[in-house]
Length: 175
Image (cartoon, rainbow, N blue to C red; front, side, top):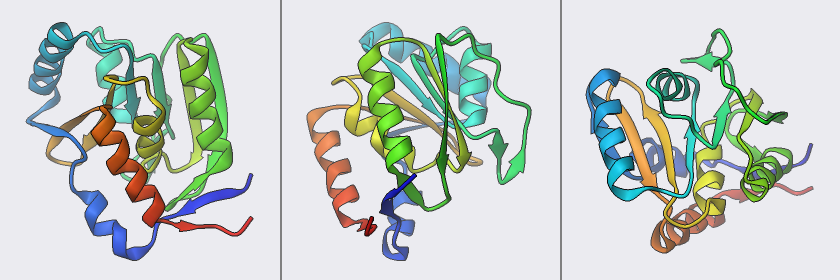
């Protein structure tokens, strides 16, 4: 498997803050606002990270190009998100880490340009960073902000640089 990055305690607080635009409210409202943004900006890709946000997007007619889920919500097992995908990949990614296996699965999924579902054994939260870094420019990476709403990150050059700095600040595992 091999661990590429380990989240240090010093970064945990920083990563609790939204990386992009926080759309506050219940999902019925946030998904309408998100659809409006998608219609205006027409992103090349939509990538969802997290079970609840992925499920709600799919149920509301938005079909992400890449879904990253772990079949868990708030550390409790949930029913897997139903999504018709061309490819379904399973990876291991323990909490607080980014494994090479997960990183490469995201890179490959985005290169292949096929509807892909990545099912993570462990935790998917930090994989939003990889999705932002490797997504085609101006793609949207969407994830849930617990008890607040949905975060939409537009993968601009500036956002990719900011994410690269976060990854550089993470401890690189000795492999």
